[in-house]
Image 1: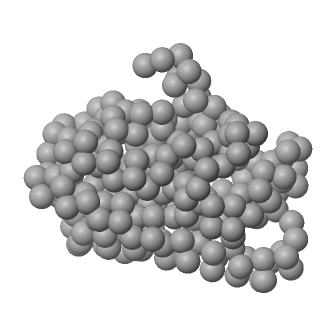
Image 2: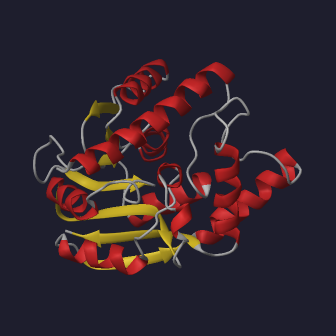
Length: 260
């Protein structure tokens, strides 16, 4: 692994740990997945997660997706994340909510998953592959740990057209805005990872509906979508750029899946 790739990973971890700390101080919810629960539900459906499945959640963060899966499908879920703080928070959360017999979180790198082959009924992730340095390696690891015939499914922010180079910076990267990867890159990587029957579903409409509804109900058309005002200067400007990219169709949200 190159020093640059390690730096990118560390940047993402630190960014989201700062968000966690700010969330705990301000009591503002941390978790944000484009499209909200609706896209999570569609991802679960695409991954063929049924009752009593065993599921792997990649980059599980504070655990909302994993707990949603366990609560709504009665499945067992293991979440992995590169942030120790996120893992500790998520394990505390499931213990408080009495889900710790169904859900657990471990500290691990998605490019080197410390779990056995062929043990999961599905492996999924939300807003993860757009952030990892080596997408193909993560997909190969996800394929390795699922059972034959099981699905790997991701919901991700994907570039619809080229973004100007002056926007291709670390802050945009950790805000889940990719600067190079297109839908074809995802499809080709799924196939190179050995996944078959690759399917694509455009769920961008759910994200646009979420943005419009948020501004209508909460912000009156102004303000910050993701973060409280106390975060460092510059983030609010990045948020506005992000929203503009969504609304202009320059970035989209897709669910991509493949079968082992």
